[in-house]
Length: 216
Ligand SMILES: [Zn+2]
Image 1 (tube, helix red, strand yellow):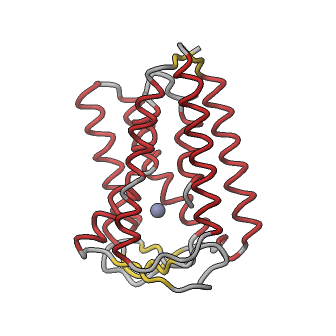
Image 2 (tube, rainbow, N blue to C red; image 1 turned 60 degrees about the vertical axis):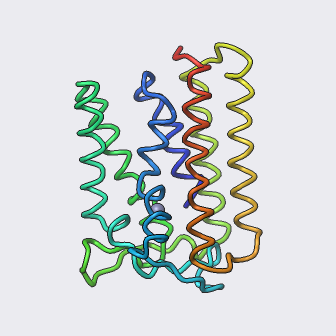
């Protein structure tokens, strides 16, 4: 899942209109933002296995630090705690922590049984929606449209950047999603890791555009 996580971040704006979309993206995508760094460090591993699912050729062989349920709960708690220590806003801190956890729950729906419960554990979970090309695209597209709808309903542009940067981001994410679906499998783990770091661009983009919009 790629666009679906960002969709949850967009939609969450309606729960927490004062929180920047950048922070919301950071929370929903936190573990996937850490994952490419841990790949480069050799802590986690992914293999390329074309045909392993209908949608992605990636075989997530080892990612307990970013994608075990226990560790996602830890990262979510830490994220909420850091936010709370800065803003002293308990409700928002709990929402942000839950958004970190939402990543694992969405991954649970789409992944093959490859998500560990805790580091070192043998059990692997995943309902495997990625085995269905149509099912995945319909689900993620609906999530994305709903996310855009709730973000637009909650905010309005303060200036032209607020309009163009928003639609630019939406178009960029849609094009990236389609390119990933249609493109050839990546050549190796290092390429995946470096490409994964470009997601930070979306976080920065979201912080920038959100400053040009206001809650209605
Ligand atoms: Zn993930």
